[in-house]
Image (cartoon, rainbow, N blue to C red):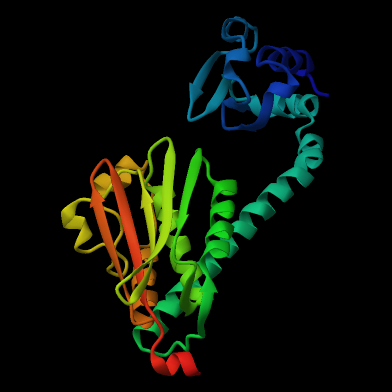
Length: 289
């Protein structure tokens, strides 16, 4: 320790102690602390201390003004904080947290890339669909369990499965329904209720996803399935500025079209939105293949 050892001890004491300091740098005249709790610092004691000019708070920093010899005081304060050792102890936890974030972002980017590529193939008729009769209930139950587990707000799913099977490519249909459930949760109120039903309508099997969310204006409904069409500013604001790339509903539209079907929406602002996927019954040729 140097000649400012006693001053250093007093400064550490009155900024709330070693454990209250999460970071420390210095400039020409000031010690710049990062504190876990600024309320734990004793401003008056520091200001009245011999060797301290004053105390300032700016930019998330707790600044103790020392003068031109601040570098020497800094050298005596650092050993008392033992920041390097504390950072080393925290590293495994930090690394795990950062790896989790990295993994989630990588998965998100991969899913987005696959979605863009799939949409492109669908638009150009280059995607080969492997259609078969798919049990609807197990697919919906798997999706609802997944979304209920990761939702940040309470969500209730009500299922009314009248049509038990649908003729489709399971992978792409499942992703399309997943997009509709994801939107229902994103553009929701504090309590989320989602009704998912299936039925036969004329020569189509329909899957409907209805929520009790913030709804969609009539003008927005005209463009909501366009590629890169994001929610209107008012809708994003009502949903706490949810953002996205505007690919989800366009993906749903392209998947249903590639099956020879269609997707439609019915909505009332402030009350609900209901999206309906309608896929045709298999043709005579498809029944015999």
